[in-house]
Image 1: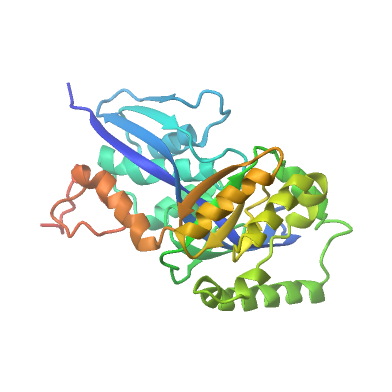
Image 2: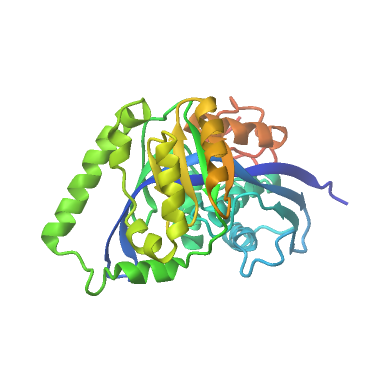
Amino acid sequence: MAATRHAGVKAFAKLNLDLKVLNPGPDGFHELRSVFQTVSIYDSLEIAYTPGRKTEVVLAGAEEIPDNLVLRAARLLLAHTGGTGRIEMRLTKRIPMGAGMGGGSSDAAAVLLALPVLAGWRVGLEELVRLGAELGSDVPFFLLGGAAVALGRGTELYPLPDAPGKRVLVVAPGIHVSTSEAYRGLARGGEGKLTEAQRIQYIGSFQSRVWRLGDSLSGGDAGRQAENDFEGVVFPRHPQLKSILKNLQKSGADPARMTGSGSALFGVFTTQNQVVEAQAALAGLRPRPAGIPAVFMSRNRYRAAWWRQLQEHMDGNKDGKQWPPQSRYAPRRRNER
């Protein structure tokens, strides 16, 4: 019987440092302008792969999540590669669910990155990104990590310089915000539809903020000009979220924003003492929300985490720095020595 190969990996969360929503495109999806940033909050995923002719996919620990993206990602890889074998997975959730932090998408990306390495399947980055986009708009970003500008549905990604050493306090109040209702509230396909002049203005203001973002994250005040269009829809329905945002701003966060369509909020700080003080300031709110300290994950740190997690199964004949990680179990091509 073939030996089972194991790996335990972390699926990291993201924040939207800026988010603008434009009109829906011909495909019905809204055109977005956003800045994504990976942070150190993570879900844990254990994967075991046993080579064999019979195919079976089993997931434990997330039975309450319907149509789980982890299962879908594994099955999509099997269909794409024609691979077989038994795949056993266990998911432990730490990223708040339904909070706008991309937990489900990151879990799916973790499968796309780890399973080919365990199974010995050759899947290039371009293929992975295409498969990720089939699973969800945020999935391709988690195949790359760091900071990036996201356009279109969020699948068109361009890297930004990393902001090392930034600390963040994420506040997850446990309020459910419906993404579909948030989009309907913006009414970009109806009375809230942007004129062409407004669209050009939106894009121009976003470009300006992105150019200034580097200064902001280095200690300037441009971060206070960051925006999230969903706040104007979500805050009137959930006043507690606006109170939390103001609390973070009073604690010196720069920027402080809601991420995605909510309901998590975050404040970016320079020192750990500021984070501790901001977390203590939440005690004055009722009900008191949970604060989760974290740090920005640069693209290099993000990839280094993946190399460490999969090192045992990676191709040892290369420098170990290829992206995505490559499997030592994959059959050699003729032109490879």
